[in-house]
Amino acid sequence: MTGGRRHDPRFGPDPDALHPLADHPRVMFVRNLPLPPSVEIGAYTYYDDPEGPEAFLRNVLYHYEFTGDRLRIGRFCALATGTAFLMNGGNHRTAAPSTYPFLIFGGAWAGRFEGEADFPGRGDTVVGNDVWTGWKSTILPGVTIGDGAIVAARAVVTRDVPPYAVVAGNPARIVRMRYGPRDVERLLRLRWWDWDAERITRNIPAIAGGDVDALAAAT
Image 1 (cartoon, rainbow, N blue to C red):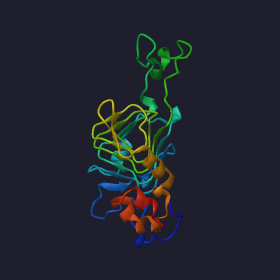
Image 2 (tube, rainbow, N blue to C red):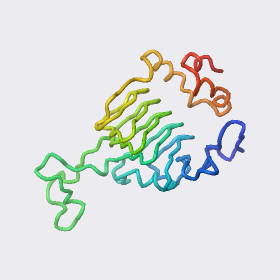
Image 3 (tube, one colour):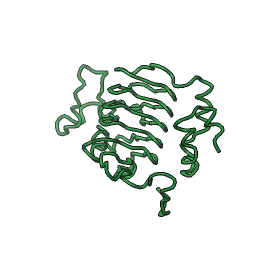
Image 4 (cartoon, helix red, strand yellow):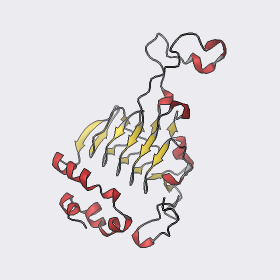
């Protein structure tokens, strides 16, 4: 947040506005929603949904605070309509004959054996910076999606995605890399998304219309 500082429209939209486009209430800067403490979202990351802001919260599924896992999404991400994050609260035990969660119904079904509360968990779900998730893509628990990655429409991401990879399918697999290893390394060092708003605005031709060399030369 800007900590009360006055927004300067010369340097882009207000990162503290829920709806940065006055005529398009379906587009929202997600971090300005009433998020639970276990969800962290960076500045300028937006979600686009005709159902409005609450749709994003409905798409963070099985996210129970008692599980202790977190959803962390970086800056300047573009989250398309229907992007869903499945969290660890939806996991069931799979090592026994039945996957049915008897414990959660309490009473005579609780306290029946040692370890009954040990449901599997894969840790936090982490989405880097400048990530684009396509329409109705699904991110499973414990996945890390690297900076600059693209997740295709309806992809189901079951494993980590490297920075600047394009993934598609169910389960999602790498279709191609957006850049070669040397340029990926350069982009990860440059971290343009951490620049201040004035510098970003000044260098949009290099960030969004140039190449890695142009971005490296930006001041």
